[in-house]
Length: 148
Image (cartoon, rainbow, N blue to C red; front, side, top):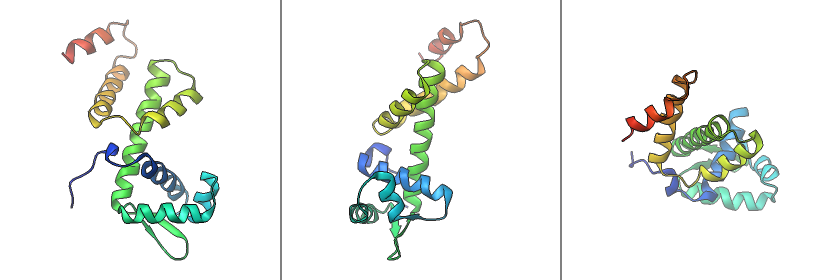
């Protein structure tokens, strides 16, 4: 197996399509070109060209029938993006107090550019914050002392 790529090694274009296909595949075993086109608000031929690019990158399989499925690599990328999105949305909402719709939008935008180390540190921070949720407020100082 090839060395795993970082999320930022994929273009935003690839990431957004993979996320959409993954969301569709969660509902049924395959995504269809026409469903992707409807959700992207573009014509089916535009999606066919995009899916061909994803196929050449090894992220999807595309059947002549119009069915699209994520490859193992595509699925790994989709799950990493989902994790990033979830962590960022949680951070914005629970730690920063950002409204849900804004947190969702910001998570969508930022998930594509952060380095893996930043995501890993964010996850550790959120876990620590959950463990110390009922504390008297000294948890942040304690966390910052641990990371030095």
